[in-house]
Length: 416
Length: 162
Image (tube, rainbow over all chains, first blue to last red):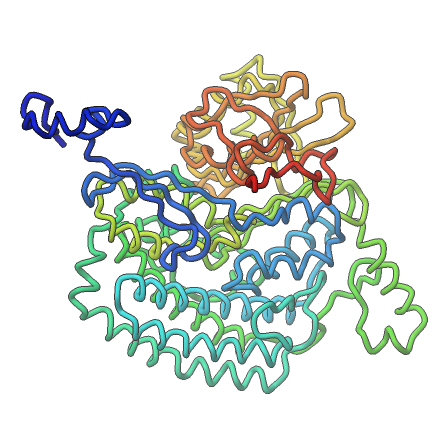
């Protein structure tokens, strides 16, 4: 932007300015303004703070500031046993807690060399996919609310409420589940839970179409998002994008397909990709992924065999609670595992799963003791927030809200 | 030829002085190298048309407390072409606590290196914005170092004056 020079300004104004000794002429001619957005702002999805430099209403610079929710989970993990950390993973990405549970126990199992029974693997897939559906429903709903379509938020939350009810039946908690255990899951999936999941899956397609009807033909919604916050394939990879945000730029990278874990290689599903890389593409990827996840859950329910839900490794896996109260040996093992931990062999591993926001990885270093020597959480939200300055540059300030909503950051995960 | 062997061969050919140590643990291929070579090696791994390690997943450090070379900086990189993960490791001494930044190779390493600096105090040379990321600017300690107590240090976080 060109500014006026000193000679072009009326002398009267100059004189008035000079009366105030704190203002220089350059300051007065400066059109730029620094705006502090957040950390307490409903549209920043938690405690994200952005310092924006504005010229009029155009953003010319942006500095994200994270750390308002930093609880030091990596430090805490170094001082507690592997079992004790499971409930803490719920608080990372609190919109899809079960997916985090699965990611953590799989990393620990890789480190300790535990094989999980097939039924438990299918149960883990089901809860992880339900978590993805719940997360995407929240993402779409709050994203639509950010750009002004309030009804969608209520409708997607109604669907998410059904998933919470399923989790309630499956593991006894609606929000912070802590359902997985090292070597399996806490308890078997009851027929009531399976009936609820089936009922939910019957309705999800139609209900999703209803939500989409409110958005896909909504001219305001489309025009506010089309071509906003564009990122190219190369930039997205360079910024370390994973998950739906990367797939919206045309890269069909999905860890479920690229490095199959659990039983994903037996499942037939599509990886939705869009090539535009803008906010609208990110929204479309999420809606398509909900359908694919529902498809995966349907297949899992069909393929799930009956059988054990915990590995038979008494030195690593917690015994059943009923046996702890009645049998001596189980009581001792339970005591040893709770007090001294599972003591995996010395070594270091990295394990990542396709979480609902992107690649959720844990890097664990074991020194042979009951607690990890080091635990690093690779959280997708942290990586995605980093690219905000690139996305918002040159856009209007109202686009910033849409862009934050479209990359769907969760601060519990970004700040650890 | 397996991808692992191709990587070994190419790296030995292009960087004869880097002091590579190759090892494998639970299907993960680890490469240890001299910290002076980290930037050119990363650049090579990313730009080589046969390898294309385009995705830098994670950068972190490990504090070994009593070892002579106290820290190890760990890079997890991934190639979409072969769906293969590689682990690069560089030892860093406490007295000479710095390593070259790889921000010029992958832009994502900007914040990851800042986090590493914030938590361990390892400085990254040629980094465009070497500030703390989680902790306040005036915080004096590095929380993930092993000498930092779990309960924190009383008075280390300055509160506003009354």
